[in-house]
Image (cartoon, rainbow, N blue to C red; front, side, top):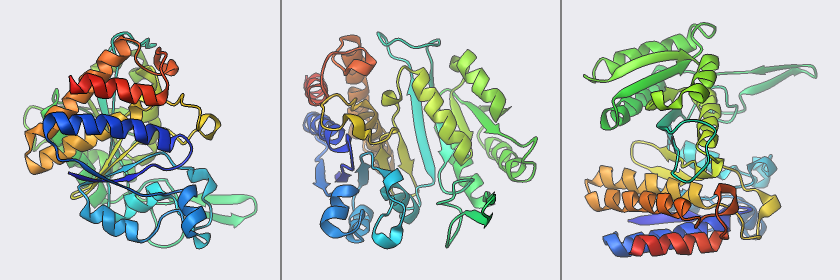
Length: 352
């Protein structure tokens, strides 16, 4: 397996280094033949090359078996004409990574404000209200007058069908329960079509139970009783908000893995930002990026019917559970170790 590794900004290089240590240990134990080709993106690339993402990285991403992207300072990148390209947006759009898969679960020994749960949010990743992903050219926000802004939301049948299919396929491999989160009572046409397509897709998957919940009610339900949910599918903005909530309910956003997947490419990406205020202090939690790499190993193994990648992914997950229970984690999740030491400790657990 060949990975294109892009450490990013802020804490990105630190958590990427820890993740690489874990992946090397998994590769050795499970004979993955893992090769990691590392390149700069973000501010480091902007300083050296005049752009946050060099065009040749797209060819490398297309020929690699997966991409691992650390957090980047996306808020800083405002003018693409000056080379300030959002790396996440760039690869998501160019590789057509339409499904953002965001698992969340509780861990023994880790305090959570709610009951134990294990769920996955499947978020449509290429359209919706987000201004950077719903226009062929230009921006989805329009300043009509200095006091009037119009934000466009795009919902298409194709995108609804493929995210519904991805969610149903995942639910079929898990506990066979699918929850569709929507706002069809207000967004009658767009979310109405999304809901109808989800129902039609579920009908092709015998044994899957489906319920539909309005998004504002879902926010309350998932806090009150998260264990009732298995796979949750929704549109882009709702999924972005809901997946951060479920990750935090597990104990920390730093425990939220994230995979951006398409038909032929996938990108592991930490669920959190670049946290420049703690960069270089060896205190950042690397588990989000490590868990994202776990999802990438699973995706690659399923695509190539190579069971050892799934076995490696399970070993890393088990190692994280053991590390948290033993306090071999960063302070934000109850441990005492620094970023690099967490990577080393987890790599040692996997090696044994």
